[in-house]
Length: 91
Image 1 (tube, rainbow, N blue to C red):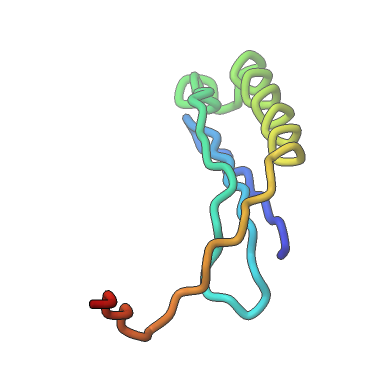
Image 2 (image 1 turned 180 degrees about the vertical axis):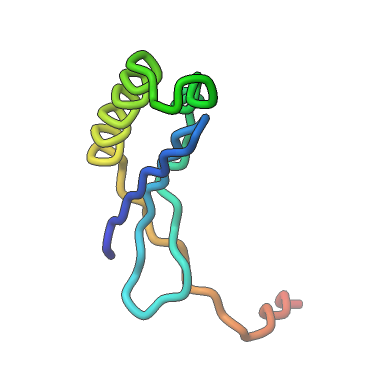
């Protein structure tokens, strides 16, 4: 399995997604998903620039998210999905 992490910086919210991807598999297993409001864009409409305090808040969250992504636990594999119908109970 391959572990992937992404941090999405938005105007108001920072998102973290850590997932495990199995080669040739469809989709992924979410290991960790979280978000935090940092209001990075606070004051931009008035000044045209990012403010020091919003940038510092956002940078602190990114540092935390990097540490959390590195420390996230491994997800135990789930049983394979079968297209076979369920077995009938024994009589």
